[in-house]
Length: 345
Image (cartoon, rainbow, N blue to C red; front, side, top):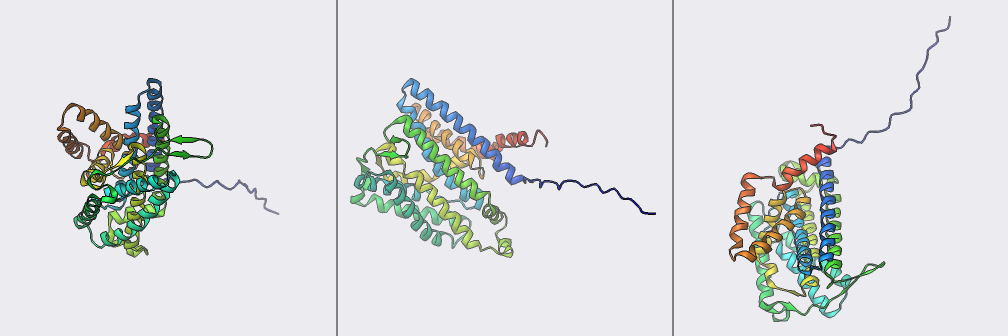
């Protein structure tokens, strides 16, 4: 007698992609940035319909400083490094861009020069700053920015205390069309796309194993070497990446305002960037964009009402730290994550 066995042949199961907690958080940030872009496009449309040049240019400035905040969030939110001198690279990018534009009115030449200089200076300064930890790192970055600010302030060829003026209007050739830097709506939309592109690059890099190791570095630096990684190289890489992001953002500033000032290198610029990140949400990336807009608008509105607007901003910063320690995104992003999970906790 022969036993008959019925074999149930099933198609091989498709691999299921598992999204961990960090991946889900990054996807939620993408959704929030998409909403940010939609809101910005509506803002631009309203500005064009009302022919409001002031608010379009103010919105462009908010986006530029959001790029600076993005660089701070890379260090503080992912590496656990508090930089009090990120204005060094923002101002550096602005001055390099202005000098190049006055000699060769080419957008791409200005951006390439800012990129190259930030890579070199960021690497050299990173070697110095990353020799120390904690509060000493913050103080070293602050000192480096102060030295650079004082050097620019006393250099006549860079305009000294008056800064560089007379930066020409430049065409931005994008192949399909050209955007003029003095076009309020056109330059706003270009800046929006540029800052979102910087966000996309940062989000991509930080969602790779490189970003996960940076988070491990922030959580427990002593255990990272046991995984086979060099903490020195990781910190230096994050520092250079942040320097490049800040410099490229700063390179847009003279195209918007037509001048640069030594104040871009002062501690106030670095401090505002840190406040921006805290208000938006540390370690979220998207929070830097929202925080940049919130802080710029508040400075403009409150500054037009009273000369003591810094007091109001300081109070807002303290209130955020006390009542919203995770910032705006700490409240909003979990809601988006829940939606992405299908309403499940």
